Length: 295
Ligand code: NAD
Image (cartoon, rainbow, N blue to C red; front, side):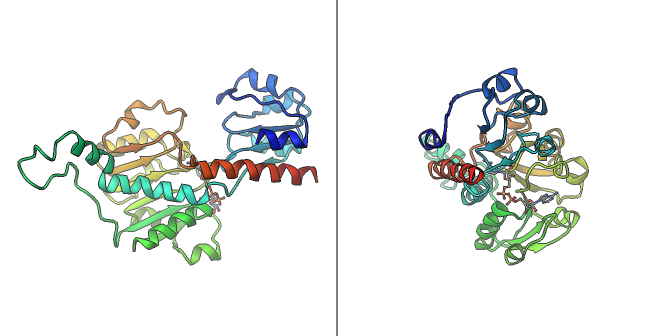
């Protein structure tokens, strides 16, 4: 990416800056015209300090690290890479669910530790397991990734329902659109695939969890704060939520020890799109966006 960008203009690269607000961010942006970031936030204060910014390019799909409302006010376009991780995040979200259904990692350890060999019975498993066939999956946000997940869930013969603020013809072919309350009432598994917007922040909260089926499974690969982590933990403890698969966290790196240590939480460090293929795509796609901006 650095090499290709250098063909377009003067480039300064900082491997690590900060994923929290810091004066270092404005200092490093300085008088640059184009800012390329991943998890480094660009706040109102930073935009006010760095008056030369003409474009903010986010090397990710979710662009909530930028105060995009203020950028719009200042006339600074914010661009993201919307499609680099579409298929892989769908695959990853299903993977989290499959791990919850069968606990592959745990059973692998059990065999290697000799627990099966030393078990008095031939049959050995450590968790009650879940079959997905015929169960209902509810997707909140049936956009690119939501549709990729829906295709996989249809292949498992699950009933797929979805809630989205904007329904699409492509979505209708993959899922039955329902209201949010109907999705909560009918789903055995809920996938969060909506962006972090004011309307989606805390969409999984105490009030909405109460509307869900007992024993529901929640998978979140969207953004951490779409889930109220305290409410999710309480629901895991009460058994209302059977299990959760979490790749994203309110604070990252995750600091919510009680949540990530919960025995019915399968967790990962925000790696839903971390394949080499997807990372290569991010570079080429952002360059074409920057080139379009120049054009
Ligand atoms: P997208 O824009 O294609 O789809 C998002 C969908 O959410 C759209 O259909 C939109 O209409 C819908 N939506 C908007 N507001 C809503 C609301 N209030 N309620 C319900 N639905 C609403 O985006 P995408 O490519 O599918 O990505 C979705 C999100 O996935 C990203 O914003 C990002 O936060 C997350 N993501 C995570 C990873 C990861 O590594 N875990 C990687 C890439 C993307």
